[in-house]
Length: 148
Image (cartoon, one colour):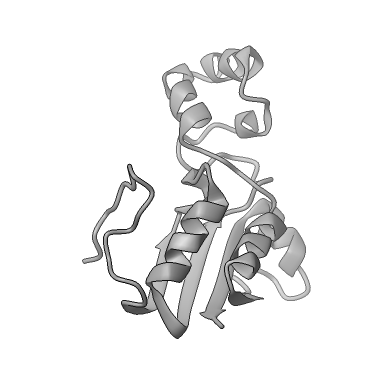
């Protein structure tokens, strides 16, 4: 089983180039400083190493962690808190503000590109043909990477 890591100091506790494959599932939306974390992924990935990164799309109607519809689209203010309380998940407000950072999928792609990765979108198995970009926005995003 892969270790669960909380990067308090921002460093992944492995040596440079240690991994030929890096997989992240439901991680990208929890990263406040995306460029720093992607740079760390690049650091621990071997030259030519591959990656697969999967996360919920920014415009997914129901937030997948606490199951409330639309509230993660709201600004991280009292408006969101009021909406979450009305939906019965007000106790998740702090988590939604401090632990989730939904971004458009192309922003994540750019961060991996800046860190030296070649990137390619992977069509999700549940994505109907011809719906790739729309599906990434509202459902699930999967990005394949290769370190240059």
